[in-house]
Image 1 (cartoon, rainbow, N blue to C red):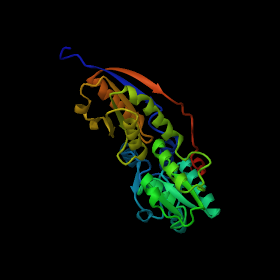
Image 2: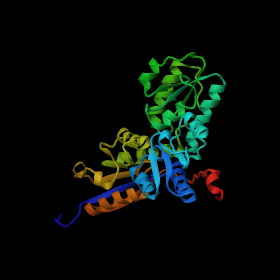
Image 3: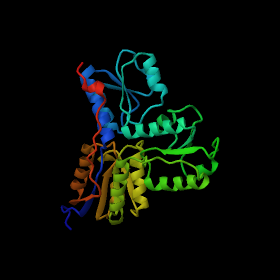
Image 4: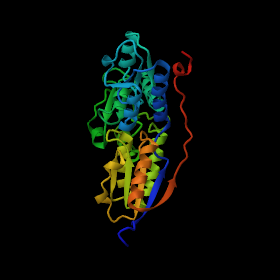
Length: 319
C-alpha cells in the first residue's frame, strides 16, 4: 500500500440508531414553545442528554436550569423527557406558571403503572440507576418509602420491603435488556408474589438499538457508540457491544473524541448512536472514517420504527 492509499474498512451501520420518538417529541416541544411564546423559554434539566442538541436549543433562546426555583413565574417552563417528581408540577401550579411536560410517553406509562400498584396497596421496587433523572422522576411519583431502588442483582438480597407478599416492580426505560432479566429473576426468586408490568417497561427504542448492536458485535473488530457520557441508553449500548463479543467498544460524543490509535489495524467497525444523538453527529463520524479509510458501508437493519408521539395540545392551539 502506498502512502496515499487508505486502508480498507467495512463500516457496519446499525439500524435503527439515533433519535427515538420520545426524544424527537421533546425537542419539538422546546422548538414549538419558542415559536409560540418567544424566548426565553426555561427548561428544567437537559431536555435530552446530548450537549449538541442542548447547545442548539440554547442558541435559539432556551434557558436550561436544574431546579424550578431558578425559573421566573412569568415565563414558560418545560419539563425534560426523563420525567419529574410530582412535587415539580405541583409547585409550578402553585406559582401559577405556564408549564409543558415533555416527559416521554413511555416514561409516563411507567409512572401510571407505579400509581396503579400503589392504589392497590403494593410497595414498588424500581430497577434503575440511582441519581438518574428518570429514576428520580419515577420514584417521586409516590410518597417517600413507597418506591425502593435496586441497581443490580446484589441489591435484591439487601432490599427490605414492608411486606414481601405485597410488591410490584417497574424499571427505568433505558436499561440493558439482558441485565434487567437477571435482576427480575432475582426479584422473582426472592419475592415469588411480586407483580411485574403488563408489558415490558424498557422502551422499544432501547431494545431495538441493543438488538442491532448484538447483530453487529460478532463481525466487528470495534464498535463506536455516538452518545453523551450521561446518556444511560448510550452507555448500555457500549456494554451490550462488549457482552456480545466485540473486543473494543467506545462511547464518543463527537468525531473529535474517537481514539484512532485504538482502532489501528482494524478492518471492520460497527457504528450506532444512542436515542438522544442526532443524525448530524453520526454523519460526522462516518465522514471522519471516510477521511482515514477506504470505506465500505453496510447497513445492518434489525427493526423498523414508525412510532410518533403527539406534542401536548397547548402547543398545537393558536395563541
